Image (cartoon, rainbow, N blue to C red; front, side, top):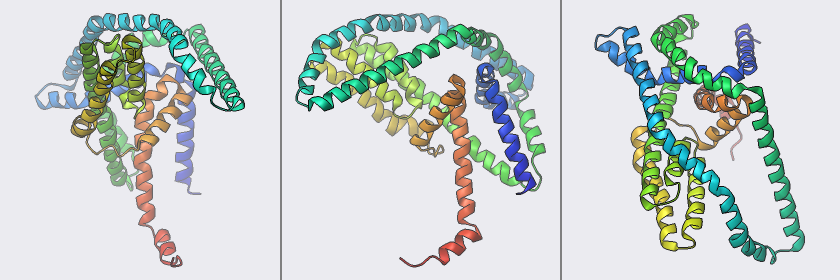
Length: 357
């Protein structure tokens, strides 16, 4: 095997092992890198207008975190109040579910083979017990370890500092990495990196705007309809829409359940709530996403969901943040490998020698 290939395989494995071993403290650094990446084009604009990089970085970071703090102070109390009210109503919803819906479900289940119904009931009970035990154990582990408090303090104190220094030296870092590239393959590597950068930028910057617009639309529309907790349901639906289909399914499902318990089986109000989510999907698919994201992503939804689940499984909450860029990088590299394979002599020889069908 080529010594260069062995070197890079060992380097990647050691890097993955290192980051996995320190995954509990990565959150502020990952978010700092993400913010620096997102804000770098603005810093470049300021430099074009004659400001130094340090001055531009100071203005951007102070303005960005000041706006975030102001938004948190103004909006967070309202959202937390709605979220708290929703969680308080969950026992009531469960009680009404047991009284109003469960009897009809039991009646329908009675028409099924008793053995099948008993098996379904037992499997569902086992699944719910395991799910509850897993969630409880995870929460207990996090709370006992004190890492949640460390991460919270780090987010408030460390992330702005990391963002400032990374943003200030971002161009220097990029230039240094380019200098370290093997001269023989530097043009090819930079070409693939530009493809990766376009994909990541299109998804992160574009999808962030899509999520904010959808959250604003859903939250405002559901609040105008008078749906209980409509603002928090709509906002969370929009924010979760970066995960294909998951945000819509969770938001629409929660919204319809709340609407049912609020309005009963009134088809008019239920139709209005369903219409909001349907209209949101039309706007997203026809106007918002094509305008803000375009066709540069080229990431299949199934691959994106798999990447997020894999990242969450390996690195926890941090893995969700790094999953998108990693899946984008892997997607670009896989497409590059396929193109090289299709244009190779090996592929052409086997294709030409393949027996006719």
